[in-house]
Image (cartoon, rainbow over all chains, first blue to last red; front, side):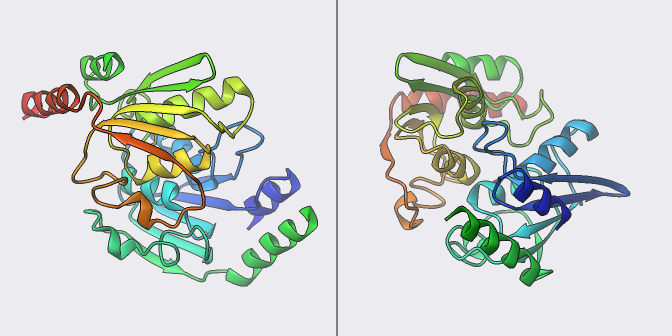
Length: 136
Length: 136
């Protein structure tokens, strides 16, 4: 949530993510506009940073926490990185690729991902709602 | 195809991509292992580079050529970048998210993408097949 708030402060869509690998913690937030990088969603930002530091493109057994249901790009990145557990907050009815626009279980992806949703859902949704209302 | 061949030479899964924005040409290939970056598929590599150079996370009207059908991560990146036209070579029956594992038209994505497949399909397939056979 703190990372999502930083994103909002930077006028980015407020989504934040934390990746845990053993006792190492990687934090990040959406940086699409700032970095001129359409792929720089919070999930991709932390995955990329962690993989670089660990020196391995596989982050097997790591746990990813994100304030919003991941889109298809991020679900793909999660699978590519072999992340073991995903916890997210708010649902994304339009772009979410876990239980909304797409259902992860329908994807026939050969990777076992533990999924838990609804964590701090209200705070995350409120932050996103306020952000988009203020922009309108 | 040349970029895919460079990837093979570097022991990366041989996929290459070219992105055209007006008269500017961006070339790239799969760099997942080399960069310790699970998101560094050829498509993401050229999208990221082009967006950074153009100074805009939207690459509206650009054209992406890739030797293999994009996976869900790359399809998501293509949509995020608002790429206008996608031309790809070989189908990817396992991970392809245009006509194989997923059908792009079933995704209900609010972005119009012109799609053309089968360009240099045989050369691209042969390169991938040889690469995986040699590794076994």
